[in-house]
Length: 595
Ligand code: GCB
Image 1 (spheres, helix red, strand yellow):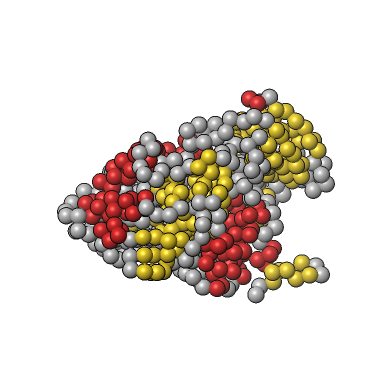
Image 2 (cartoon, protein in one colour; image 1 turned 90 degrees about the vertical axis):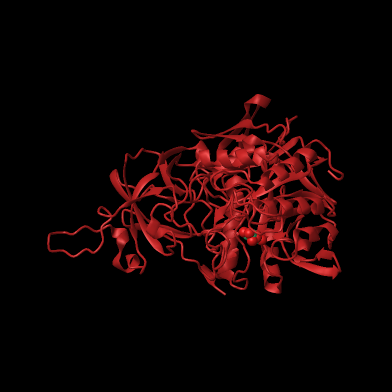
């Protein structure tokens, strides 16, 4: 057990990780200076940069001086962007890369400055002008460091070491079915705020209420006690509250809101003002509940017509990050007839989440607690807790997000249940308004042609997720016709995955693996079966688009891609795309038996 020293008492690091996030909320709504662009980068496979002090950005003092590295003379990598797809030699690279960005800055009196990273995979250390700002672990959550006193008037040198080496104690761990794209994969910004500023806020309907907004604003800075004004101009709301000595103003606002839904993704302008600062956001109001076997949106049962997707760039290889990528991917999700999308297997970028808010797509958002982890290791738990905390902190005002997923296909064992039960408790403490789920895959054969979802984690969840691959990893697609399903809990069920692989354009008989016909036939039998499943509240088949994976090597077929997409990574729709689309159209028109 690792301990952190705090005067007079020892607390476990896992507990310390639960301290409230100090992330600045709503970066798109702030005054920022972008540091995106071309950064000089040194590839450092033997981890020479730490002992040699690359963060000093040394230059030879005279012509006889020995300095064995040079950012100036090193080629550049684009930020945001993974390194793997920017240089052929880095496609399979795992290790550290040192990035440097020089920029000039003019300081303003009364302004605090933070450097913000949307994400960098997996471990990151950040240095400004030779001084270490801090470290971050986790490839998909944002982080920031205050640089007010480290910034120089004029020229500055920001150096970032990013290391994507997989770790046995990491989250995810050593094996996962996606590419471990390394690098600074999301935007980097300087964020300018006043001395005391609005760090975070919560403006959402209170649990169980369609009229009452319960909210808070958290200030950061010396002037903890201030007036905080909350405005929702369209609803003629303008109220002022006082923050307490901790900088927190809690409030309740009652009104008749137009509720957010997939058919009517209504967002209100919300304006928060405190001191001289104004922060604007667009926020939707809706309720989400699990009642018996149903999921209720705004008090009414809803069937989730979904698809799972990775954060993989369409039409080019690599990590998706841009607004255009989000537009393409979520455009396909809409074209399929979905009202729901599962962002697998880690928190996706904010462009996607905010677009889902505007498009009216309900979102399942997940942390990369995937397959097996070092469940007994407190440091691993602390990392998972931090990723959960920061995912929730970034997106807790997004109406689109209705499900926080704790894990995917984790093995049934006692230490894993303890670990995930802790995460469920954390998630509920941070957000009592959304539903908690996980993608489970442990089933028992309880009779011939009968399977029972029996993973004990089901007890802890609000909504059960089930991944099953009948017809692909065992059996034939037709076996689904006679299979009956049972659930141990009377809770809503989302079939969070099923699928099979086929490169676009490869044709054959329905029993010939790797053909579109096989994949399509599998979808048809699965969709028939899924319709007969008890408590079914939605589905998100695997997967929207083909994606890179080091586990998928078959030459000429996979070539290091998981081909279970219903769309190829060049945007070509496979036969299964249209089968799923027809199924969703039928459901939307109320034409199937059960939905
Ligand atoms: C799963 C995993 C997913 C894989 C998929 C597959 O069950 O959750 O990450 O990519 O199966 O293709 O095998």
